[in-house]
Image 1 (cartoon, rainbow, N blue to C red):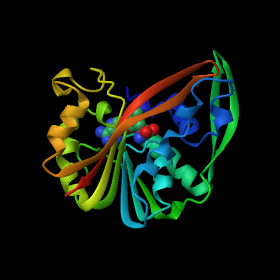
Image 2: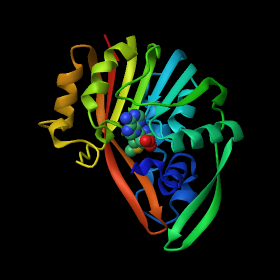
Image 3: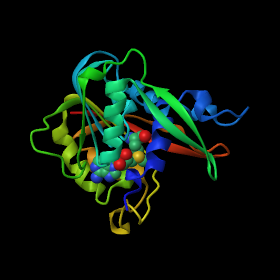
Length: 239
Ligand SMILES: C[S@@+](CC[C@H](N)C(=O)[O-])C[C@H]1O[C@@H](n2cnc3c(N)ncnc32)[C@H](O)[C@@H]1O
């Protein structure tokens, strides 16, 4: 079973991507700085308008909305048809309903809104496989793959396609919490050392590493249980 096709994960991700801080986390103290991850990581691209941007593993689409502020065309691809349907519903309605799990059998219905100032008409959401992207996708000025690599069975196949996907001078942002699990990636395809060293050895022939830092994110599971995780963010320029 693909967990990313479940309604539980769809609701968790709609809240993670579009929920207001108080809808996601209402406790005093705690890791509030981890909120807003899908928008925060897009701010790491250089400023300025570009022609084309690509969001791989877009889930329910928040980072694609953010990319639309400064890209005339955004293509956003995810393997989960359920996530793509939810992203398209946010795009057409500008809002979405979330059944937020509080605990056990207790749920609360909430409305989440698409982010103001974004340009959803610039975005095309499509179902697809980041390891086997369709021919004719073309090349992009900005490519984002957020928390995707360690969910792929063969991440090397995506890394191998990146030089063709990113235009010369274009930027690539990869984030990953480096949570390598057999459930998603056979151990033979995990990096043999650190994820950072692996990315450098796979990408440095075609990309210059511009920055590398840690980005926390927070996913609400119930009213009292949260995943606080730290992703490694690397930003690259295509030579
Ligand atoms: C951990 S989530 C990250 C989602 C989103 N980028 C974010 O940062 O919130 C991983 C996403 O990758 C998608 N995914 C998994 N395998 C994929 C594949 N082969 N091609 C494209 N997307 C994939 C899942 O459906 C899920 O939406």
